[in-house]
Image 1 (cartoon, one colour):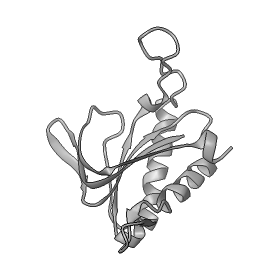
Image 2: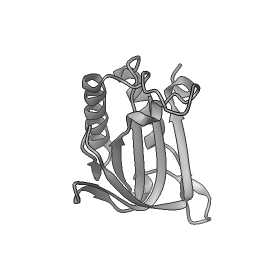
Image 3: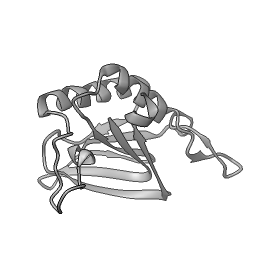
Length: 150
């Protein structure tokens, strides 16, 4: 599992020109799932993400987590995080999770996040989405379950 986490001042996602999810201050999270992922891996990744202290405190030090700043989450499924670009110029996506499994994991992630964060927005699984954001910093973190969980 891979999470690309961007600290944002605001972010939104649209499908066919209609906004389907938006947040103010918080995290825009791109989520990639592979077939070897499990709910246990998702739980570990979510725990790490939700406790990342990447918001500034009163001394301008990155000491505050998402809950401390009452931040929101915009979570987008993105199978292209598992692109394999080792051969040729056209990426292969064979490592990305099969759609049925990836959808199940994505919905699990949304449910678990909603249990801990009051504002959780999402894209639409499997749809072409247009994402707008104002990255704050910029501040971008990549969490990979191969490093975090195994």
